Length: 80
Image (cartoon, rainbow, N blue to C red; front, side, top):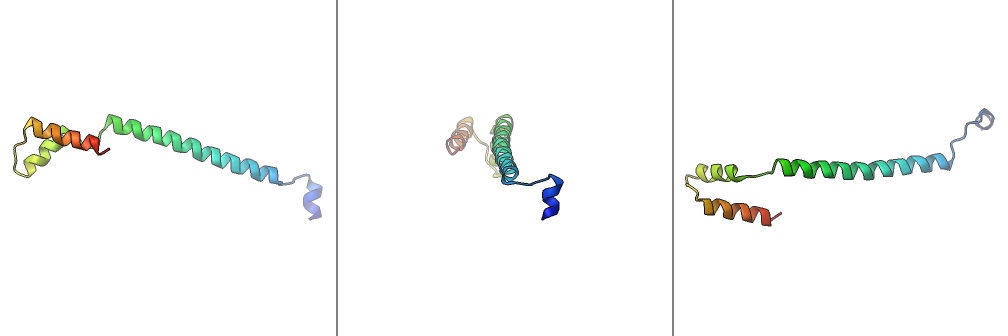
């Protein structure tokens, strides 16, 4: 133990506190930045659109009307 005291290097609780504060700040900043990027990506590329609904109806063998498509889109937007 005398070796550490003589070298002038001490790893005290202040250093541990700074590391913990840095990690917490990094996690908080990272969370908000990734959340903002994810929301922007969802706004640019919505998960489902009218073309996809038409394709779904056609794959079931039905010709959808515009009213049906709008109704499905409304129900999708309300469930968010």
